[in-house]
Length: 138
Image (cartoon, rainbow, N blue to C red; front, side, top):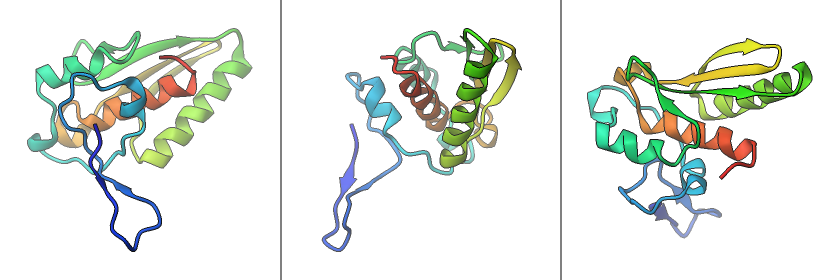
């Protein structure tokens, strides 16, 4: 669920960069959320929130360190892998939230975490949801 503010002077509504706790949130709603600067423990997600968001992301797992989320993507060839990497780079740049990547000929491993909160923030899940949307996965 989004909180939308539509002051009369704005041409488009302003969507605040956080979500209310909504057990019925969809992957699409998460992907349409906005990343915002997050710093300190107050912006770190609790374990219950992590699990709530993680269940929306097919194939994503909590990293062994429990400080990030990750997924391995496979492709038919190098060109498709590089196209994916470039698209992820664009998403990351637009959100100002950048994953760690391991790249191979036909694979890419993504790892999102928020160093400024010492673990996971909503930004990690927003960016992972955008990656899933990029691939047309629900």
